[in-house]
Image (cartoon, rainbow, N blue to C red; front, top):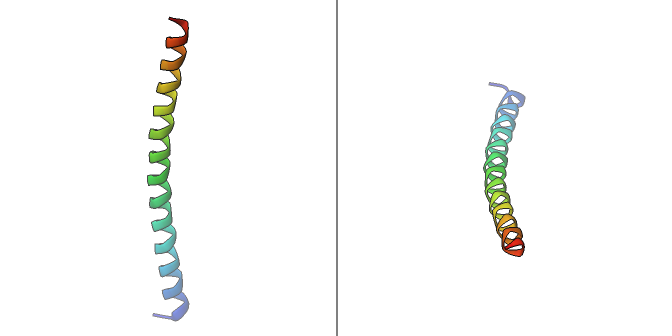
Length: 49
């Protein structure tokens, strides 16, 4: 196997790892965002009551 092919493989592995981490981060952010939206709705309902 040539060095450039090895490099390309390791680069692709890094990219796919980064993608996985980004997807995990996104799902965490979405969970946090939905919690904030819920709290905001509760605050608005409390103001109206």
